Image 1 (cartoon, rainbow, N blue to C red):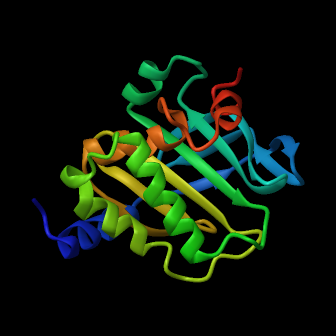
Image 2 (image 1 turned 60 degrees about the vertical axis):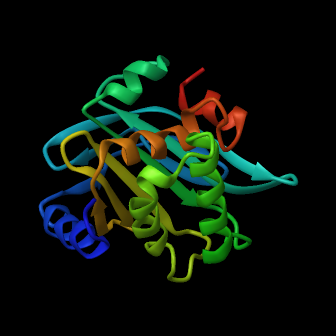
Image 3 (image 1 turned 135 degrees about the vertical axis):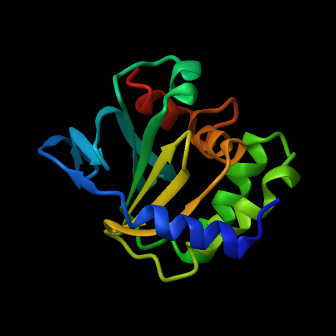
Length: 191
């Protein structure tokens, strides 16, 4: 198993070569303009679907899924060579601690409680959410079967975390059998 330092430093080198951009807005959800396309490196991804993650009637974030081509088939999405999940924070109620707790719960649900195999990667990922999170922040989680997951905050690359098992578990936080929110999963699938 690779050390945390190796994972993060390798990831930062790889992330430096990625280009992340957005294009015209496809639609507005909960006062967030959701881009119709984003480009990661030389790969153009299109909006598959987007929706709101809410709790106790409060919109917390807008979650968007970007793919090479639209589909609502989970297997096709998980097998796609590249994809991206974008989270636009819409509530000041989301703090770094609450985000880390939610991510931890998401990985527990996505792996049926079997996180041991990817715990080093989860720890590296959780460290990316130690800085203050505020309303208006945007996180883009670009997944690549060859590279892993590159996390961006407000368009700036934070790190790349390697590992296919980690990449699959991350996507299943929103798209798995026990997603963060059923209605958000449906919206991200474009249903």
